[in-house]
Image (cartoon, rainbow, N blue to C red; front, side):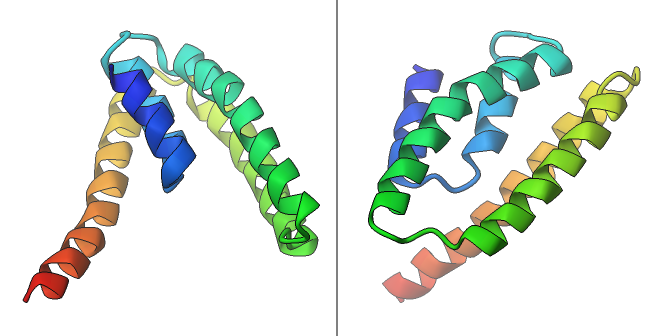
Length: 117
């Protein structure tokens, strides 16, 4: 059910879907960090490809900034792959994910609370 919910989130909102796709296999399936990251990347490849094709077809892709972001993502992935092998990596990744998710939810919550007032 959690993975179905994440899939719906990816299709509808997208915001931080990679974070949720990393967190779920670690917490629910008890996968090691490196395996969870591989699962996340495998699942997000078709999702990203379909989105890219749809937006590119309509001319809504900023190729230069996207290319720069892709290069940064590759560099970050290479560094993260090395760090993921450290013994304390799972604990620190979990802590970082919690901080990132809470940091994203606070502004969303504030926006909705202010809209109600």
